[in-house]
Image 1 (cartoon, rainbow, N blue to C red):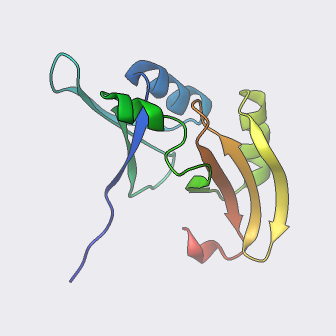
Image 2 (cartoon, one colour; image 1 turned 30 degrees about the vertical axis):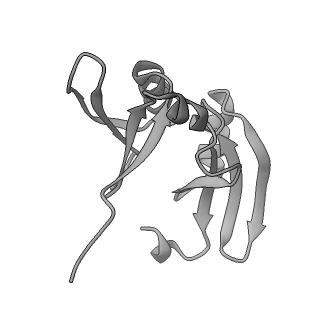
Length: 135
């Protein structure tokens, strides 16, 4: 049997502001933006490079979904973004006004820092000590 995760849904307040953040601040690629109805779109973004998983930007449509914007995991780190050069990306993200909640630190598995997306979801930015783990 062969399976893989294809997309991860990220609840957002607004499609266009989320697209702008991910493409302009994190330099992700807009993979798809298809109108499904007057209120719903299929919007996918992916990090630069060779990524097999896309974020599906899902606009909140109910009060319960709205309550999850920015806190999909109860305050824990939600997503893990691997990089081949943490210092390049850290400095670029600082220049783009990304808010870091923890400075880069050396751990057994690599160098890691924690940042917030536009809604407050926490991300780990990691340069693995073993590059075969990610790339």
